[in-house]
Image 1: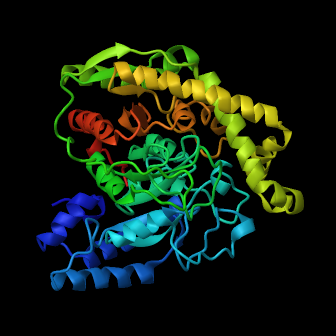
Image 2: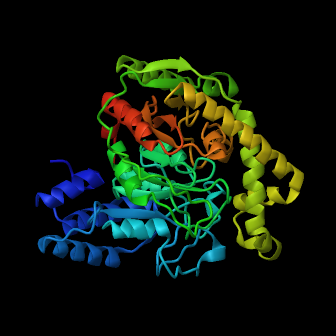
Length: 463
C-alpha cells in the first residue's frame, strides 16, 4: 500500500470512504513527516497542528455518522502566506506584517473548507510574492526537497516544496509572473494558473491587480482538476472575477490526445532564450510522446519572450508601486533588500509607460487568441534551467528570469506546468501547457495524457 504521505486528495478521499484510512491517521502521518523533514525544508511559516488535528477528528466523526461535507472531506491543504486564514497571521514573509492577523478566510480558503478540506498552516513565500529567496527576512526561505542545497522556485515556494516532500496533498499558490508554475517546475509537481478571473482573489494580498491569479498546486493532474472545481466560481466582490460557466474539469481526463492539435512554441526555448540542453531534450521528448499518443503537432510563433517580459515588468512594477509606495516612503528598512530593490523599480516608471504596456498587452492577447483558433493547446517551456543552488545569488538571479511563464500572465490564458523528467543532477525538468480561456478541461486532458505516458506522477524526491 502506498505510504499515506504520498496519497493525493482523490486517493485519500477514496481510502476514507473504504475505511482503509481515517482523516486522523492521515493527519498524524503528515504531522510526523513535517516534524521530521520541515526543519531542513522550511516549507511552513506557521504550522497550525492543534487546529488541524481537531478538524481531522471532527471530519472522522462526520464520516462515522454518514455525513460528507464535500469532495475534499478530511483532506489537508497548505496555504501560501499571502492568503488570509482566519485567526492566523498573513505575514507575506515580511517584517512589515508579522502581527497582521486575518479576520476572515480568503474566498479561496473558504471554498476549500466548505468542500471539507482542513487547513494545516501557512507556507513560505518570497517577500510580498516578489523578492526571491532571501536570508534577511523573519523566516528562512524554503528549500527544494530534491536537493535542499537548491531553491524550490517561487514565489509559492513553500507550496511547491511541501507538496514534493509529501507534507500535504494540496496547496494554494498565487501567480503574477509565474509564481505557481515556477515551484511546480522546480519541484516536479503540477501547478495551474487558471484563466484570469476564474478564481477569486479576495482575501489575498495583491502584488499586481491586473496580473494576479490564485491557483491549485498538487502532485498529480486529477487532484489539480478536483481542486479547481472547488476553487472556481464568480465572486461579485472581486472586480476581476468572471461569471464563467461551471467547468467539468475532470470530465475528459482519460480521453487521451488523439486528434487534438498541439502548437509547439519552439522559439521560446530555441532562439528567444536558449534553454539548457537537458530542458530542450525533455521538451522534444514530451512532444514526441504526445505525437505517438495521436496528437497532431505543429510549430506556432508568438511574440518574443523579451517583449512579453517587458510588458509584464512594466505593468507589475507599476501596480506593485501603487500598493507599496506608502510603506516604501515611511518604512523602507523593514523590507528585505531584494524585495525593496525590486519594488522601488515602480517609482521610476511613468504613466505613459504603463498605458503603452497595457495597449501592447491587448495586441498580445489577440495574437495568442488567434493561435488558439488553429490549435487546441500550446506546448512550451516553463523554466529554461533546473533549479540553481539557493546559496548562489548570482546563479539564482541569472536563472530566475529564464522562463516562459510571464506571457500567460500578460494574456490571462490558463497555463499548467508539470514535470518533464529529471536532469542528470536528479533535479526536475519541466513542460508548460497553455489553453483557451476557460477551457481548463482540455488543458488537464493533455497534461494527464503526458503524465500517464511519462510516469511523472510517480516521481518523488529521495527523502
